Image (cartoon, rainbow, N blue to C red; front, top):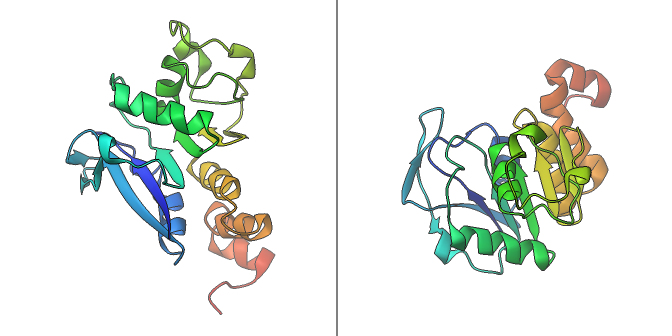
Length: 196
């Protein structure tokens, strides 16, 4: 069984991981768990979440670490920083969206990766952010074992993370995401009714 851990903080952006987690969790080969620095967090939308793991309990053998954005990423947490750095260095899959990408920039964790985020000017005072030329003005960027996205790109984020982990064929992933991107009727006219 492969494991994906979604790292969430108080005031996490509940919509940013919903498409990805539901795709993973409905597959018999994957399980989805949550982690944080507290036992319980509340999303921007008011969902209270009892998390499965504290950051110190996340083992090295997980298959995917997903960092969900929100309003609390100004944290200083050495365990989290070290966990992400170890995964990136050892070519283990990491995905970050919205303000979680800001955390990566602030901690020098985007070095050697092409990336995107909400806005590069937000990082102008981050002394550890040293590869400004690797920033791409795109909704999502996948480079090696890292996917980054801005906060308006949950569908594009889902698509690129699923491709990074070889969840299924690229064609099937495109099709699955298109159901939400196009809407039901446009999807049916392009692919046929998925429920027949």
